[in-house]
Image 1 (cartoon, rainbow over the protein chains, first blue to last red):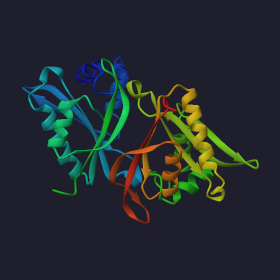
Image 2: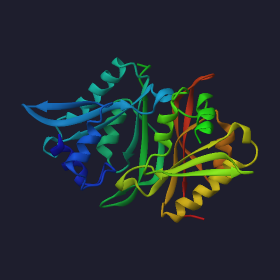
Image 3: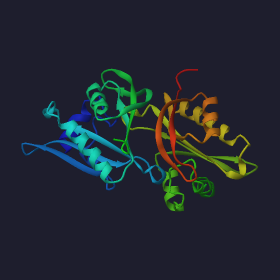
Image 4: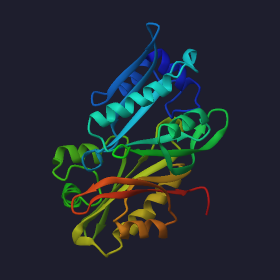
Length: 150
Length: 150
């Protein structure tokens, strides 16, 4: 899990974590006790991981949040889509009414496209909220989908 | 500070905290070591409090977040406005490029009006993301303002 996390955040193009975050800090975040954590396997190798959690406490706890990471070696296999679909089933099963992504970097087009295919909409735009290691300050989208509609 | 916090969250109309949150939990949240915490005084009484913090880690750490609470006894005195203006000065002084409010309840019209007067814009709408104790599920706004423009 750490290998995937490290490979993803070191690129500095999708997550706000320090690209040089330590293994200990990364796992403490990803495996935080109140998160539900999952891995995706392909040919007996872990190729992806995602977390599902409550986006806000009590009076906002009907909205789930999730974060996804795919091993760079496993791109194009549909791992992200499989985890995304799984997370929606899990979130519904746990009684959430909606799912929200708080921070989707606007230059991460494959992710945005995938989330739109899975029923998410861009409901907000945060101007220049991400400092992309290559591109500088770029916009960030807030994405949202209801789980109470078909 | 706890008295104000308790009086504000017990109403269940603006913050997601459990309206019955304990003093210990509330202060642990509000006085979290990496937050900057402030109080507003009027006639030698604490009438308001706010926190200023980083909204995201490393690659998002140029955007500040803040949260404000005014004593119900001190409404209409301009305490919220004074704290809001102070927070913008503080955020600029600490080098932030922007400030973002992640969760402004849409029925909290005085707050929305005040933030708009202080230069914030609604940049996102989260459908039904707050369970208002009286009104049920209501929309939530994400509000944002640049600190690098006049």
